[in-house]
Length: 213
Image (cartoon, rainbow, N blue to C red; front, side, top):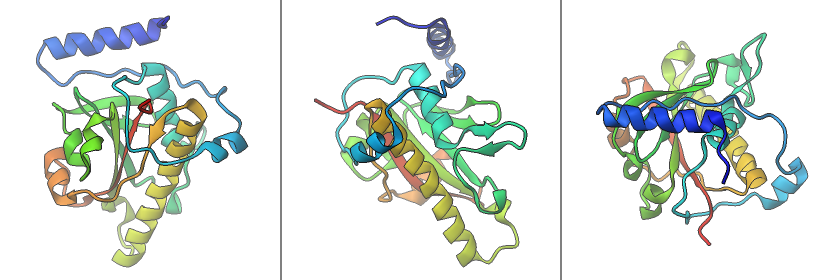
């Protein structure tokens, strides 16, 4: 398979950081905003899959996935590919891999290292979770919804996480990837492992990879 220069640079940066013993950096190439299957075809192929091939996701595909999930599609306002109640942008998207945990910075379109080490097994109650090369974790920052009654806040946060997860489903259907959204998570344990603040709450997780043949 032919690798792009950006993909090679990303892989070299990961290897160098890992050799240094710290959380590996994960630079992302610019997202490709064209290509893929048409929307109606992607909708016809959308499904949940719970088995994953032992194959990594190339940096360019991961970049496109994260942008499709909740990237900035209107640079003049900073607004995203997924809607957000009152434009709070309160859902933070994390990516857990075999090398570490990262937080997606949508305005900069990059993955910021959070933790070294593999925490994928903690992101769901089923054994298959740790076999996916990337597990997305949706975290609500309640501080961005201050002054809203808890019931309304929780509803909006859950709905906003759902919008992002559906974007991921459609991207995966368009690109031949496998995914499933999960609610069966020991959320307090995962929040401790991730080092989240008291006002940050795990909503969902979503393993992503290639389907097992």
